[in-house]
Amino acid sequence: MSKLYRGAASVLIVAAFSGTAIAAPCGEPTSTTSVIVPGAPLTLHAVMAEISNASPQVRRAALETKARQAEVNQAGRRLNPVVNLEFENFAGSGALSGFGQSETTLSFAQTFELGNKRSLRREAASAAASLAVAECGAILRQSQLEAAALFFDLEASLRVAEFANDSARLAEELVQIVTKRVNAGAAAPPELSRVKADAAALKAASEQAKAQSLRLRFELAGLWGNPNPQFAEPIVEQISLQGNDVLGLKNLRDHPKVIMALAQEDVSEAVKDLAKSAAIPDVTLSAGVRRFDESNENAFLLGVSVPFPIFDKKRDAVTAAGFRIQAEALNRQAVEADLLSQHNAARIELQSVRKQLDVLETEALSEARAAYEASIKGYQAGKFDLTTTLDTRKNLIEAGIAVINATRNVQIQDMKLRSLTGASPFTGDIQ
Image 1: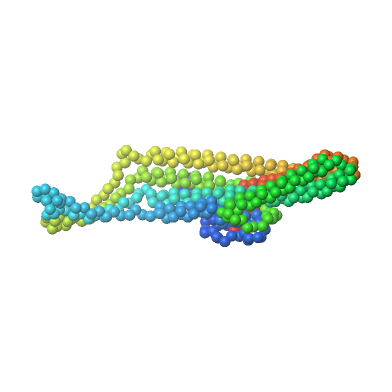
Image 2: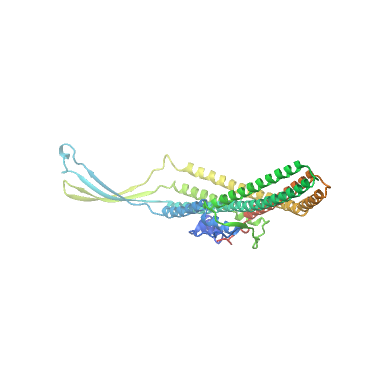
C-alpha cells in the first residue's frame, strides 16, 4: 500500500465517522447533558443518543482516540540533543594527583535520524490513531445494537405484564361465573376451587412479568451508566430509512468492523515502512571544547558517530511486519465475508419472523379469542365443561404471548439488519 494511499485511507477512516452518530463520541468532546427527560416516555432515538453520549465503554474508547492523537504529536518530535560534561586525569597518583593535570570537556551531541524515520514514525502513530477511531466506532455500533435490543425487550416485557394483568382479570371474571353456577347447583364446588387456584396463578404470573420489566429498566439504563432510571414507559417510533436501503449490500463496506480492519492494515503497512527505515543507520554529530588545566589552554572537539550494522540489519523486523500485513488482509476478507453472511441470515430471518407475526395476528390470536368467548358463553349455558373453557383461555394466553414475542423478534431482527447496513437509527440523525 503506497504512502499516498495510506494517508488518503486514514482520512477516509476519520471522514467515514464525521457527520454520523459516532462523530461526537469518537472525534470531539461529547455532551454530558442527558437527552432523557425524567418522567417522559423513552424513545429509541433517545436511547441511541444516550449511549453515544454517556456509555462508559464508548467514552473510554473516545479517550483512547485522544491519547493516540497525542502520541501522533509525540512521534513527530525531534530527538533531544545531549550535553556531556567530563572530568579526566584528576585525583590519581603521582603527577596526576589533585587537579593540576586534569582535563575538562564540555560537548554537545545531536543524533540525526536518516531514512525519513521521524516522518514514518509519525505516520505509524497516525495510522494507530485512525485505528482507535475505528475501534471506537465499532464499540459504539455494538453498544447501540445491544441497547436497541434491550429497548425492545423492555417494551415487550411491559406488553407481557399488561397482557398478564388482563388475563388475571379474565380469570376473576370466570371465578364469578363459576361461583354463580355453584350457588345455583349447576356446577360442583371443586370447580370453584379450581378456577380460584388458576386465577391466583395468573396473578402471580402478572407480578413476575412486572418484576421482569423492572429488571430490564435497570439493565437498559446501566448501559449508559445510570443506576437509577427515571424514564417512563418506552414508545416505539416509526423509524425511517432516510434514503438507505435497509436490505442493501452497498453499506456493508461502511460497517465499523470493516473500517477497523482496513485501519489495522494501514497500521501494519506503516509499521513495515518504519521497520525498513530502521535499517538505515543514524548519524550523531558532536562538538565541544576541552580545557587543559596544566597549561591553561583550550581546544575544540568535533566527532561523528555512526552505528556499523554488521550483526543486526533489521531484516527480521521487516519480515515480521510483512507477515502481519498478510494476516490483516486475511482478517479484512474474513470480516467482510462474516458481515455478508450475517446480513443474508438477518434478512432471511426478518422475512421469516414477519410472516410468523402476520399469521399469529391475523389467524392464531383472532381464532383463540373467538374460541374463548364461545367457550365462556357455552359454559354459562351449560354446553361446555370447565376444562374446555380453561383450555381455550390457555390457548388465548399462549397466542397473545406469541404475538408479543413475534413482534419483539421482528423489531430486533430489523435492528440487526439496520446496524449491518448503517440504516437509521444507526446513522447521523442522532447527535
